[in-house]
Length: 124
Image (cartoon, rainbow, N blue to C red; front, side, top):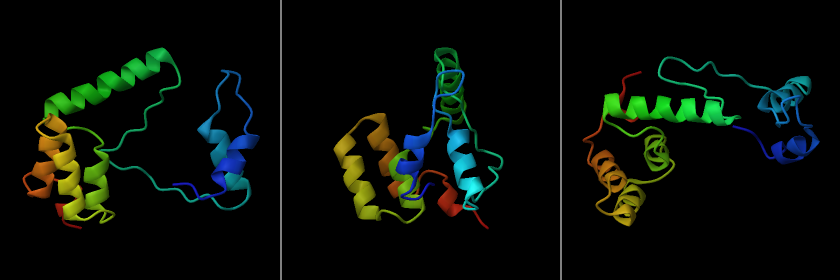
């Protein structure tokens, strides 16, 4: 995660040869100031470049494949927030109610009822 300086740093980033603002440039700015903290993403994590139409398509297919083979949605914001203790069970249930009987709402309800294997319940 980036701190509050990220907006000012981002304003200084110039487009790359591809015509894009590169996250690497932002990271280099933090590195030069001695403020870059890195965490290696272990098994089960993926960094997907979506800067072009073909790479966005590939990323979408990757996510779809994971969801279909595991039978679970990828990157459910409310589930992540709940697992890290950023929202309460009551807030998770409110979100589930908001989405109703949709597959998303049903998934949130299952998480609240401990019916979904989640990082929160992994042993350390």
